[in-house]
Amino acid sequence: MGSQRASLFFCESFDKLRNRRKPYTDTSKANRSKIEKYMKFLSLELIKMQSRIDGNDEDTYLGMLGEAAERKLFNDTQRTYDEIKEANNDEWPTDLTLAALLLTSHWYKNREDASNVSMYLVPNAYEALYMPYRKGTYSSEEGEE
Image (cartoon, rainbow, N blue to C red; front, side, top):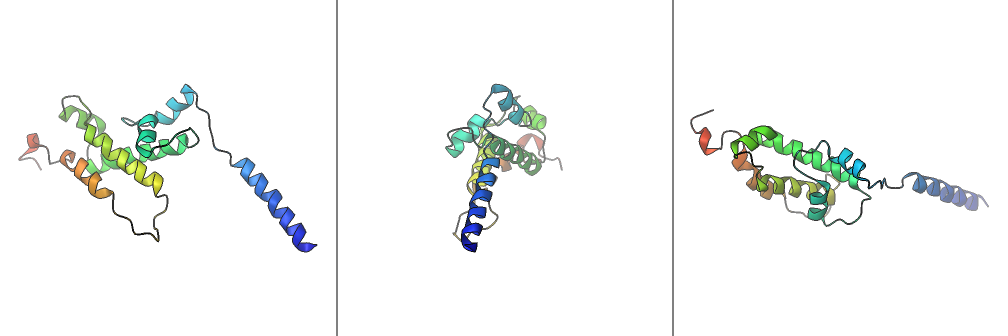
């Protein structure tokens, strides 16, 4: 009798938790722009295409990953969005978009810091894409420190 009661309690608690944790699925244009408003060059559409995601269940999470990837890119290049565009004739470099997308999809697929499966580093490709844009590596900056 006691185990039935505990089992029933667990099932009721699980149902409450499951119902409370329904994904946020507001797909309106206003919500998309709210999610993307902090991203400078990535979009949810690009992130979903890179990660092969259909549906809108994780748009908010993907937006946070995109924003974090952009911030990491700016930190790693030691440049702002405007500085990078200005140095590239007011064009945003495609390889920097690809670098941020690689990070975003890597973070999406590997949500934990560690794994018991042997994995290869994505940052090798990421570094190859962003390093030419790092402060001090532009050919126009030779002689500057």
